[in-house]
Length: 180
Image (cartoon, rainbow, N blue to C red; front, side):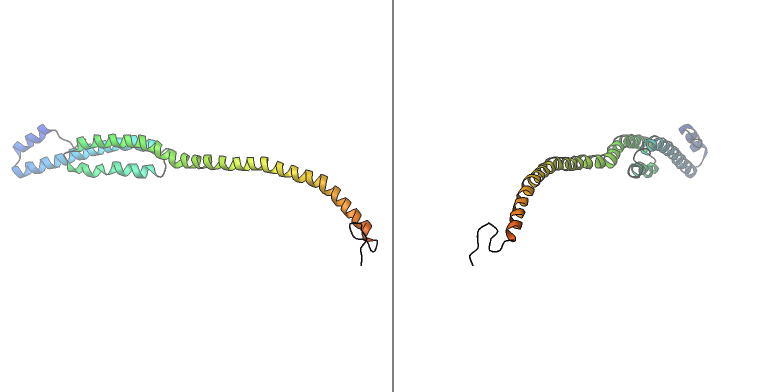
């Protein structure tokens, strides 16, 4: 802001200098005033917007939000609208950062990691818990009771009868005499 001169100084320079010099001097002063305004506005918007965005969205949000705020720096050399475009851009950059960073950081970090496990893990844990608790006891109880109670007792009787009858010639396994 040190090189900026007021309109009264530029007007006095016009009366003292020639026509071409006055036009050149006024254009250089306009360029300096626009550069000063664009630098101050961008430095304040970048400081206010980069610090909140650098905490949570480390990679995605600064790359998308900062280009939207750095592009208005190309509209500043138009030398007429810096006072109007910079507040409109700084307000948009602040509102977009304050709204987009929580909405982008939470879905990118928490929503995929929370929604998928919250849907898949209960479906998997319920299946893995309900199936063993329902199928395994029902199958183990039936398989254990049937095998331990009926199968050994019936197999022992069948094996005993078969052993007793196989040593005698002419008898079938059912105890009846065979006719040859």
